[in-house]
Image 1 (cartoon, rainbow, N blue to C red):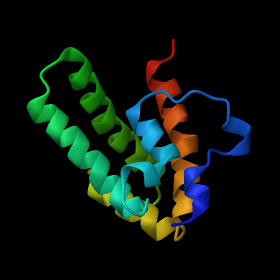
Image 2: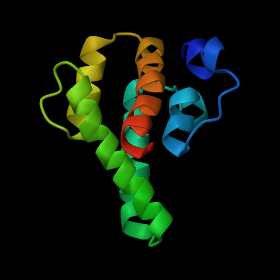
Image 3: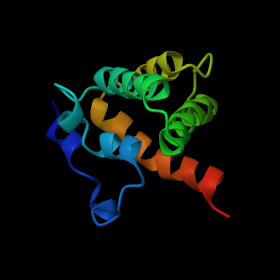
Length: 121
């Protein structure tokens, strides 16, 4: 695992993360064995799939909806994403970025952009 995956970019070291998804993008090795893109994609999809089926609260449903909406938004951003399914989006990310560190840099850049575009007034 590339140690850069574990450190936030210098210009964002004091920025608070917005939610669980963003936390995983900042510290992928904390949530998966090796911190690879593929592990993180499977981990997050599994987490949100389980939350959708097992946690019956308004807050959990909002997080699940946000994850689904983010993958659709990301499909529009990522060159070569053939559909908005998480597996297609993350495969396209892998084709576009061979290094995990580069992918997580982009995800850490794009996730706040997504939140801003969807949830700011």
